[in-house]
Image (cartoon, rainbow, N blue to C red; front, side, top):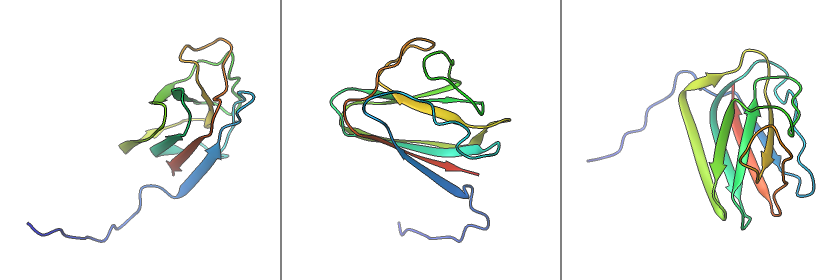
Length: 123
């Protein structure tokens, strides 16, 4: 069967946020959108030898070591993974996030030893 290509009337995402994690400390990137965004997709590129986690909090001011994330996504070592949310994941206040190798929440977080890049498609 042949493929078809259609025109999209309205794109879901209007902005791309790109960030490469610090390999020495874990610090939340606060209010990265400057408004209450809707997330439509997240891509995690983990070049390291240890699994990494993308943690997001619906706030304008998060603390990686004590905030409890509302969204946690896993990136196995040496992989690129994409998470798509067709209807969007709406945030009522703001978007703050951090990248860590620590799975548990509300405790000291460990920075990835190698590059982890996140790309976020938002409204």
